[in-house]
Image (cartoon, rainbow, N blue to C red):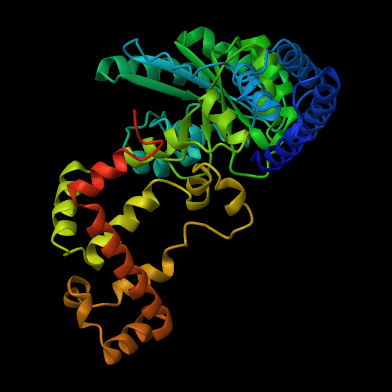
Length: 424
């Protein structure tokens, strides 16, 4: 989402490259370019001006160490100000009550219903059955009833009776704000007294998203914002502006339609991404979500004995795919964002490899050494690939296995932990 902004900011900081010290002149030139970059990213002009004014004040007040170049100092200041602009720190939702009632509001098409399902509570009548099955959560409906306030009150009553820990109430949406919609949402709020009100907004609508949030907040006084569709072509202005306009935290961000494509919003991590620093913490967290300790121990033993095979390889591919979009994951690695920007990486990135492995017999997967010429031809025919592609996969697999074997020894592990950047 922030690719263009990241590129523009990098070019802005280069204006300070080679400068011996920070001066009012070179700071002004740099921040003029930074302000343009923010405006192009659809950040409100007042927010952009206020942001660059704060950066200028801090930059000119710095006693730059001789070991720190002016460009590096400016990046640090901008990084800190971006974090502040987006809220400073992650903010949890209030689910301490029993049951906790969470009211969701937003325009039609903003992603309210999908978010409700991602939050593990399905909503919206026409999507209830499908989403309910996906997240394995019971759904409360009233056949024939058209009174949303009555349905909401009865749903909360039902949740208390059944001992559910939380209730998420999805509200009706419109293509644009209208008084009837606002009256209905306000009536539901007053009837169920929610512990948390979340406003869901489509990040791709840019400044319109901010204006809509402002109107909803004036009527509902919501507790937090959910930004959806951050995987699209949004310029990022909503994420950078919405906090300062409504003075409410962004609590969640959604990056796709899949039920697991929902993350807690961390301003510091988003600032890292904007400045091209990656997001290793989120990457590790996603990996830990798929981490199976028993499987890891089993795999480690196989690697130590040089018994890692294609069944293990396929299992690792499945775990990686569960972590999310491959291109998004790669962009979380520092320095990789620009490298993968124009690459065609998607969920089908492993499709060919999986087809080859699944075309092997169980014996061939367990013992790759069995793959002779005739077996490769059969596998190529079954997977829709060529013998050349199979040979390439075998070469990569053997190199991976050798590397994993070499890294499994305690001496090598100890050496790794003492490498620069690995020490704690």
